[in-house]
Length: 193
Image (tube, rainbow, N blue to C red; front, top):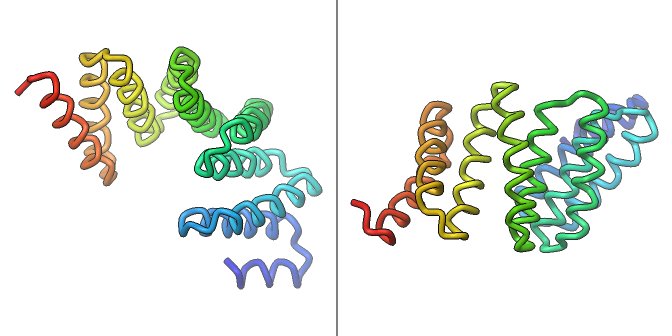
């Protein structure tokens, strides 16, 4: 991505430069240096706004929200996710809308606002099913299960975990092992063998 960024800058491809900066932000976020991820995302956001790339702007705003959520800065994460959601709806990015709704649910869940979180998860789940995003559907079901477990709705949690595991097996996502551990732990704690 560094080479791509250099070439795009050399040829004056501002839109491509914004994409490369966003991709570098993804790499830094995955590797751990969150401040580097933020720096790249912020640069990408400036360029995407400059060139009028509304769809890309929504992506980058969502990515900024992810970093701030990982840093524990929940209000800042909400601010970016809400901006991303507005843009994703504006440009008709239904898949991205489903992702951002799920992410908003994650933040509200960590803030202890369970009903608010569930509302976002339900919206996300409906969209992910509508657009055929099976992996995303599994992720949102997992998140609903985690929320249900936290409020002692164990049957709902188990149903969500089982559905998520089935989907993750279908789409061959490694998350299925994480879900299986949750299923085993839940069954153990409620005495269901």
